[in-house]
Length: 169
Image (cartoon, rainbow, N blue to C red; front, side, top):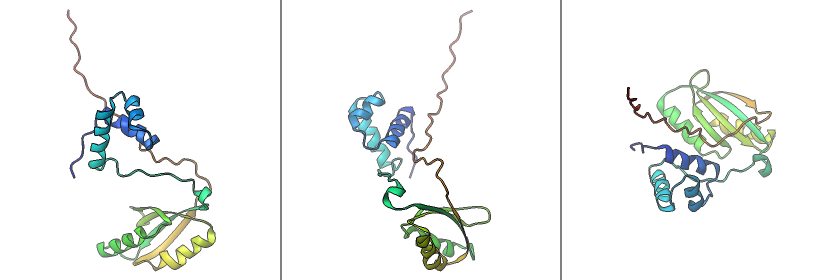
């Protein structure tokens, strides 16, 4: 899919939407100094192009009983495409896996997992993760405290170079 060229106005719109996806189009248009129709057209174009992937509601994990966050490094027995594909498919099916990254370094994958308690983590590691295809080694680290968590990407408009004006001598 070709990339949609984004200008400073698009980035301004995206920045506002990242902070509040429920903002009305009229409020958004006012905030970015557009009239509502062109603002909505820009939002729809960015949705169609996949720039805006989806709209979500962010929850407080503790408020819904998910008090334990764990980062798990997984090393596979073999790093061949069929094994990677099977592992990735299995991970995608697990609701407690919030993020999964293919990595360089000692581990092949890094997972962020949320569970209600240590017993649930044990069940996930023993009954699920260790039985996933190709898993060779598992190392986990508990998050003691969340220091920073952002969902909004750091959008910076690209500076526009303007021709210098000539001074008359």
